[in-house]
Length: 496
Image (cartoon, rainbow, N blue to C red):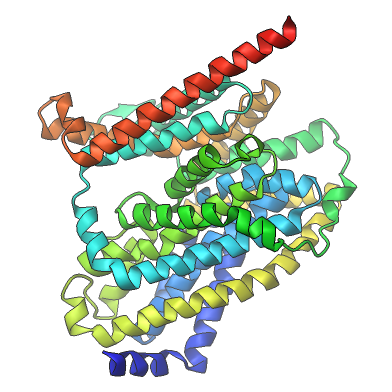
């Protein structure tokens, strides 16, 4: 085995492979930072270029694009409150307030450190735990999925701001909008037009909720630019700040690995789950959403931790962990590699090369992040009169480029108006987005579970995993109710 590893290391550590990975990481970061330009698009567009490449370099380029785009979404989320990817939405909750406080450099550094740490832990998990985690993932059926997603939905309470009621209203709106389109039995809901039969895509809803309201505020309210925001400086994350967030980084990385290994969940749900858990357990939980570094650490470690983990079911079982690894499955097949248990017997040399290359990519991600951070930091110095139309054009172009659909552009504009209305009414946008992303997973797995049991609801508590999540849901709901009662008593005391 040691001889095989040394041979694989020698094969990977060539100038050609390093340049391919650097190009993939660098391109992924830039694409991820552009609103609407998702990692799925980057990997899909790069796929034809792999036809004439050797197997391992081609896969490494796609993996590098995936990792780079996942981190890149945090750059625009922090600087202009425009998440480049859905998994960076939680990063915007604390990253943008830090930028407004003149601490964008600190936020970007924490996002980078957390992303690299989560990515490295994810790669180690892929190397050492691929088979056990894949077996565990096979034990997770529709009932377990449903209870897991229901537990993830409890993060709504943590991002509801000062009013839990308004947060629940926002989440209910998100769940309602998530039902638009075709259900698993072929029925159409809210399909007022032919385009709505396919439902609403995450990208236009995400960008519309977070980016356009900020642009509308700049235009309508004529908000003067904050001079402090532009002063990024050399704001390094101190050792004390990093160590204070280290527990959340490790927890987020673990959550990312576990949820990434379960097919169909992906980085977005992992980021929301990790953010909620960090807020519940942190001593600074009240500061989340107002500019807390620990919130950025939790989100970024989880979404990057899920990247390597989505390769676990792909390599061990031949089952893609998310949409991007579904594209990678095609790349494996094109190169004559068939993912699954036999891959570790017939192509072990290529597997070792892939593992070593992924470890290298974590180091390259750090370098690309540092360089890109300096490049994108100049965004804060762009005059507001120029920045506003530029961001708007990027949003419109990015959304249209996904599927060349004017319907998605229309959804983007409508959701921008909805988001601005929610801002005026003080309704938080984060619960809406969380519910919109988790809603289809909750509904589909609930209906699958009930179909398996022929309508018997007892299947939702039919395994130890479901019991664990049910107990956690009850525990979190109880704590939330107690907290709201305590807040109500404090308000009464202040009035008296």
